[in-house]
Image 1 (cartoon, helix red, strand yellow):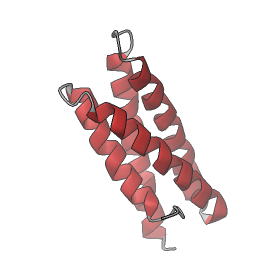
Image 2 (cartoon, rainbow, N blue to C red):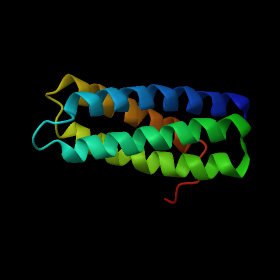
Image 3 (cartoon, rainbow, N blue to C red):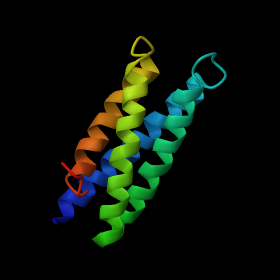
Length: 110
């Protein structure tokens, strides 16, 4: 696995964590948005863990990337339900990009 693959994943994870944090902050306290907030916070956490693991590479990075892909896909799916909100639209796009980048590292079953 090339260093570039890891760096692309790290960059996407950091961008996604920032978008997820912003979305969670904006949606916090809004009626009916509890699931979005929970998924955004969980996704941001997995993204940070993945970015850190990718700095070292190896098996830890693969496992972290697998978890990150799952968290990003769940968050994106939920945020896409509220695409009329700018923060959710931005978050969903960042999550989809991150999932795609992390998939290049993760061993995701077909």
